Image (cartoon, rainbow over all chains, first blue to last red; front, side, top):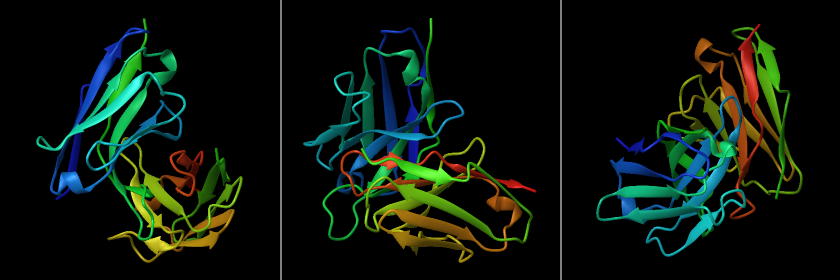
Length: 124
Length: 108
């Protein structure tokens, strides 16, 4: 069974840092691009960041560019999101998601499956 | 950035009836569109990709259609477990993947 288990969320002050982890199991981790998607309380979904299978290519939403860093350790089947300079508007549940590359495409299409999410709260 | 607009925001439907959800893109996304279902307190689940292909294990009462800028998710004969929030997502514009604001399907 494919599983994605996030950890590392919590309460942090504005300007602070946090590192999220996502432990993957049940599939060959190093053959899938991975991503983070977040959801502010009571709001919709927002794509945050993506990383290629070998970690050599990374992509970010404009809202987090320069503050967040995505990485992966294929030897540990783990995805990370280093979040620096956190703001109140970064408060959200952060989901680890496996990216599916459609046939005839070279980048992520849809997300399947999703982890259960980890809550990040930025507040003083 | 491609803006995805879903309507209505809330849809009240009785069990056993049909629900029709709309998703509109601000510019063409071809058939590069996915639908997700999210129940309270749960992560989203993939329903449809490629605008009309059901994901593994998704019942046949879920049907996706459309291309370009206009898309529809139809749920025939709503079951109790179908009451949830539904999101569309375009993947035509990389890496600026965007989601719609969601449609909540509630019991009438």
